[in-house]
Length: 176
Image (cartoon, rainbow, N blue to C red; front, side, top):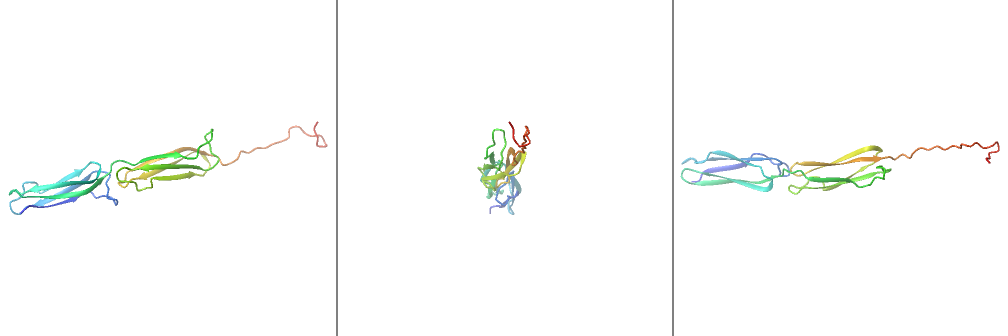
């Protein structure tokens, strides 16, 4: 009779079935008749990026019978998503806007996929100099990355101007 063996994943995946670090697995085995040649317990650590990874543990008893158990469906993504951000409303030659300023981002993740949308935007509406906004995206493994749009200057207030007459009129309201 072949030895008994069970294998399990020891590091749990997140709700999307992914990890962003090493994944530990282990086995336990027994043989009630001739005894095991291999250790009764052991482990394996998945360290490489990839989806659908598997590892098979095999034990043999002293009579030469062997049995295996597999840990499968291991998904590891160690790489943060790619993201770029930009200002969509251009500034004037002085670096200022006198209205709202639109900005946007695009993102991608080649392994586990994004939790957040692949594109999005933000509109600056308040007056002020040196404004910034940071977009952040997360992939299904929990890796995050950010991109910032900065140096946004908005002036919504027209300049104040006053005018006056410098040459006084005569008593009849005329100038010559």
